[in-house]
Image (cartoon, rainbow, N blue to C red):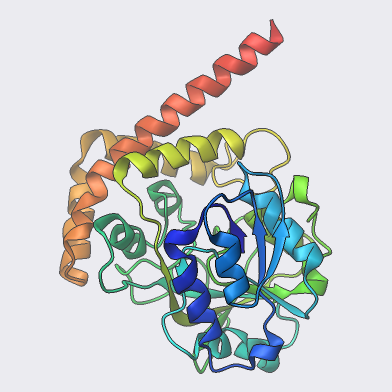
Length: 326
């Protein structure tokens, strides 16, 4: 669990983990901190966590890699400090597939839950199943949207009690690897998991490329208390895009692959939809009649704002690269 001044949510997060109906002696919580100046460390110690000074203040992804390298147990889980487990059986549900299915690479929570008291943007992200509407339109959302009853991305290979099995490849893998993701530590160490190369989606893609393609989607939820507003959300995504740009650097997973015709087409549609507002409004209405929540109606504004934020970030990156090449 990477942290940086995480006091707003950390106590509730750790309390939900320590309240699980699962042997606490088997749970090692690694807090990999980026230099907090609040009471993050004291809270971690309160819940008997290992506290690691992880550095990388402005990038939590390398700290996730540090956590993996320091973990001791067979299974590793990626739970962020703004995640809250909704019930006491959550860990049991999430690890059950490992004991029932051979050759399983990992398990992922199916949905983001709508926690009572959530602000509008928290509910909006939970409803669409992603923190970014671009992932939704590219068909790569990390969770299932509340608009749908059934899994949308890939065929379901097997159905079990409480979960189902899917197989991912380089073309169909969604943005999984965090917010309730479990995997074997031994497998994870086969990925390019050194801190400077670590990004949670990329290390899962590394495993898929190595042939570890079987995953279980667990039919439970996880709360994600992002405390986002429209301004914060777009600002975060601009920073994310510049820091983890999938077009440059060492990214192995491409949310948008310019060589893939379907990605180009779907991104084009996202831009058209966002600029004209009509489709996002219709989407909001569909969502509202499916699950009554006014947060659906943030969708047109969020789509337009993200389109603008990514456009500005892309222009900035291209300009910087041109200036460096002069």
